[in-house]
Amino acid sequence: MAEVKIGIVGFGFMGHCHADMLKTIDDIKLVAVADTNSNQLKEIPEGIKTYSCIDDMLADADINTVIISTPNPSHLEMVEKSANAKKNIICEKPAAMSVAQFDQMIKAAKQNNVIFTVHQQRRWDKDYQIMKKVYDNRLVGDMYIIKSQLYGVNGNMHDWHVFPEMGGGMLFDWGVHLIDQILDMVDSEVDSLYADVRNVINKDVDDYFKIILKFKNKVMAEIELGTYYLTPKRAWFIGGNKGSALIDGFHGEGKIVRTAHLLENVPGKITMTAAGPTRSFGPPEPGLLKEEPLPEVNVSHRDYFTHFVKAFKKEEELVIKADQVRRVLSVMDAVRKSAKTGEAIRFECKAR
Ligand SMILES: NC(=O)c1ccc[n+]([C@@H]2O[C@H](COP(=O)([O-])OP(=O)(O)OC[C@H]3O[C@@H](n4cnc5c(N)ncnc54)[C@H](O)[C@@H]3O)[C@@H](O)[C@H]2O)c1
Image 1: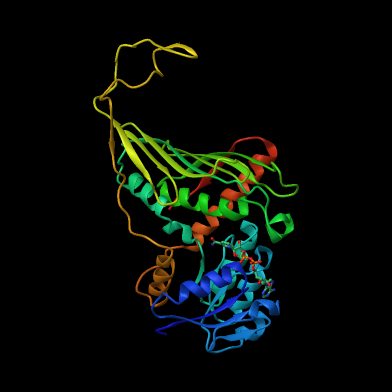
Image 2 (image 1 turned 60 degrees about the vertical axis):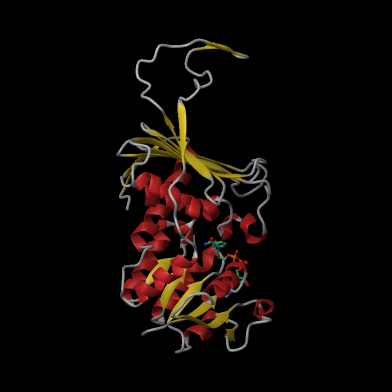
C-alpha cells in the first residue's frame, strides 16, 4: 500500500479544509467524499466520487483511509463502521464525547487491525511549537508556571456548536486542542486539576473556561479561554527561575526576558506608586532586564498529514496516538467534574 487513498465523510467546513490540504501532500490522494446534505456535494472537482452516505463510500475498494469530519456525536458510529470495513481512520476532534465512547472506538480499530488516529493538528501550531522548544530545552530554567490563553470577541457559538447534545461549546472545540498541547508539552504526570466552566453569554453551552493542572514535576499549567473576552489574544507565558518566555499572537511573536544579575537578597528599594509605596513591584532599575529572541521553529499543519503518510507506510510511529487522545478525554471528564462540584480533582494520568 504505497498511497493513502482517502474518503472524507462530512463535507462541511472541516471536510473542505481537508480536501484543500490533501492537494499539497505527496502520496495521499482524495478519492471520494460523502455527505447526507446534497448541497455540500455541489462543485466537487472532477475525478472525485461523491456518496450520499458513509455505507456506500465504505464499499468503495479504491479507498483505504477515511477522514471523519461529521459533527461530534456521530464519530463513534463512523469510526465503528469504517473499522469494520477495514479502512484506516483519521477522526476529527473531539474524537468522542467521553472516555467510554473512545474505548469502544479503540476496540473496533484493534479488532480490525486498522490505523486509528485523531486530527490534533494544533500540535503543529507555531506558537505552541516555540513554547514546546522553550520547555524541552529548559530555556528559562526550572519552570513553575505555563499559561496558555485564548480570548475572542465573537461571543456566540454558531451552527450545531450551540447545542450541548451535539458536543457544542468551547471545551469540546478549542478546549481539546489546548489541553492536548499542554499534555504533550509537560513531561510529567498530572497530579491534580481544578476547573471552572461558564456560559457567559451563551445559554446552553460553555464559552469561558479556566483549567489549572498541577503536574508531579511541580509545573503548574493554566489554560484560559473566553469567546466574550473582548480583548482578542492568543498568548503564552512560561515562568522559570532563569527567566520568563512570552508569546502574544498566533505567529509566535514574543521574547525571553532575563535579569542581568541574580536577584537574591537585593535590598528593597522603596518606589512610590499611585497605589502607595512598594519595595517589590516598582519599575526595574535600568539595565536589569535583558531580552532574547524566542527559538525558531519551522512547522505547519501540513506536517500532520506528512507524518500520517509515514506512519501509513510504516516508516515511523503515529504521532497522535490513541492513548494520548484518551488522556485528553480523561482530563476533559475531570474538568467537567471539577466545574460541577467546585472541587479540585486528584488525577492520575501519564503525560507523554
Ligand atoms: N481540528 C480542527 O481544528 C477542527 C476545526 C473545526 C471543526 N473540527 C471538527 O470537525 C467536525 C466537523 O465540524 P465542521 O465545523 O466541519 O461541521 P460542519 O457542520 O461544517 O460540517 C459537517 C458536515 O457533516 C455532514 N453530516 C452530518 N451528518 C452526517 C452523516 N451522518 N453522514 C454524512 N455526512 C453528515 C453535514 O451535512 C455537514 O456537511 C467536528 O467534529 C468538529 O469538532 C475540527
